Amino acid sequence: MSIRIAVDGAEVAGREGQTIAGVLIAAGRRTWRTADGAERGVFCGIGVCQDCILTVNGVEGVRACQRAARDGDVVERESR
Amino acid sequence: MRVVVIGAGAIGASCALALAEAGAEVVVVDRSGVAAETSSRCEGNILVSDKAPGAEAELAIVARRAWRDLAAVLDDDRAPGQPATEFEEKGGVVVAFPAGADALEAFAASQRAIGIRADAVSTEELRRLEPHLSPEVACGIHYPEDAQVQPSLATQAMLARARRFGAELRITEVTASVRAGDRIAGVLTPEGPIAADAVVNCAGPWAGEVATLLGARLDIRPRRGAILVTTPMPQRVFHKVYDADYVGAVGSSDAALQTSTVVESTPAGTVLIGSSRERVGFSTAGTLAPIAEIAAKATRLFPFLAETMLLRSYVGFRPYTPDHLPAIGADGRIAGLFHAAGHEGAGIGLAPTTGQLIAHAVLGTPAPLDPAPFLPTRASLEEAA
Image (cartoon, rainbow over all chains, first blue to last red; front, side, top):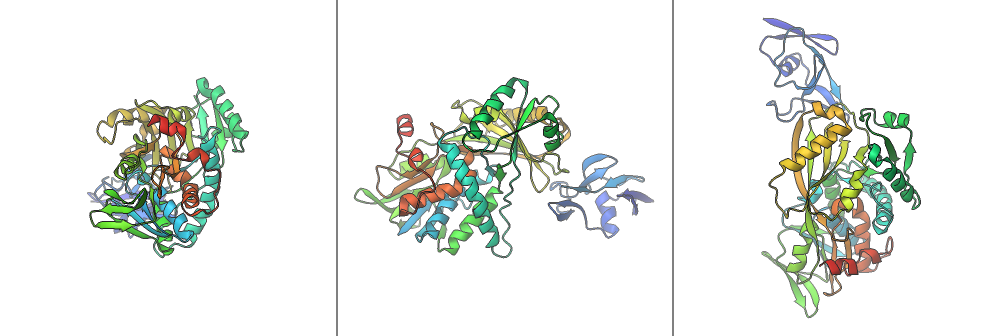
């Protein structure tokens, strides 16, 4: 079943069961956070490195590689 | 002149650089590696804000100016792929809860008298500098001169530059001295002797033990500290923010656990939270009490921290001297032996000037300031030993 999430206002399509990182990578996005000007995204992919975090439905610091995407999620990029 | 520097932390690296730049043939010896201990378990502080008027404050003022120049040199001449020192003049904000407000203002006034910039800020200005501070905070002093480096990168950069001036790094352990009569003539290692005209002990919290190995005596003890690291987040802490009771904790001689809040964010987005001081030898056990106390106090200063996750915590050992001043200069008993250790939590900040003082002591180059208060032979250090 397909789902849709909003990323900084833009709609991105994915499939149920994908993580948010999975949805973003499948949509061709490799990075979605900046730290000190550097682009960050999935580094470890197993929830340890905290590099892929973003804000989901107003909750900050959510690991994109661990959080299953749900239809209607509102996702915002974070930057330091 | 051939000089062996024992220890590849920030102090050893700075001494190696100053000596090599002045023309000495330098061999740096470390049993673990570059910035393997204290210099990679700290916050990289270059502070004038926590210094009460006195010899250490004078050293800190000179060293902070030296850091600005040194960081520019290190960043300019780095090799491809070598990261920057991350020198940042971010400034410090020292805050007090109502009970500590008068003491903080008096302390800042004493610092202004020796030329430290310590700007009293209004409540509105304080909220502008640090919008996420607790409303309980009564007052704050802004110290625009406080700075920092990424300590292990800065240490690597100093050693990289020292190597460009011919210094050599060997990973091995010093086991004893080589003597020529009353003089030290080098050090022994499991790989064999290393001959030298002078030996500089920069072994940080192990400097007392190294002095003993070399047949000397130096009273330096480990003082453990813990730091908590949060997960990365958007920036909410903009300066080094610490509770005014930090100064009292640094200056205390108590062996029991003391904590005082120090909070700052890093370029990677994490927030570093300290600080604790306790003398428990080199034990890394039993860290829950300091960690819990640090977390509770930090949350009082920055309430948003209650909702953040910790990524990790770590402990390290500061080199503590009983009279709270570093020991920099000639040993006094063994000719050719020098010490540069005992900087407690200020070693990164004091490193460049410490290196210059050692170059002065060993090679006779100009001293950056009066070396007398820091000599290892001073009475206040001898008596405690």
